[in-house]
Length: 144
Image (cartoon, rainbow, N blue to C red; front, side):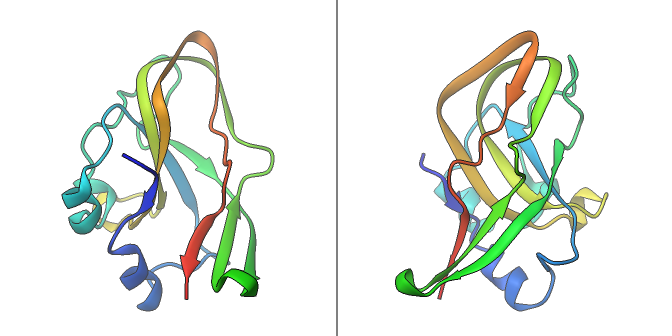
């Protein structure tokens, strides 16, 4: 599955549930990519299945990321949101079978954490007692 925004992301943004200037965000690692139906129906972190187990240095609920910029891309009729510069690195972790990451707004309560986007790694990744970097290779785009 390719990287994609969750269907309810636009609704949460339009209703004011997400504010890139003031909210906190996290990224959780998954061992199974959400299918098309999940992209359409999952709304919050409580809906997510397949999060990597909290083990070997990886915390339950993922790791914090920061908004680096929110920029209008008028030439392409969209807004580009970039996160964490430099890319976040988990050190001393043991991970296996990580196929991607889910970006979400963090409130501390899974049922209140709206999902933004799934980032597909293209293949399963892992590391044993090492460092794992989540590379934000492209911004999160909101088309207008």
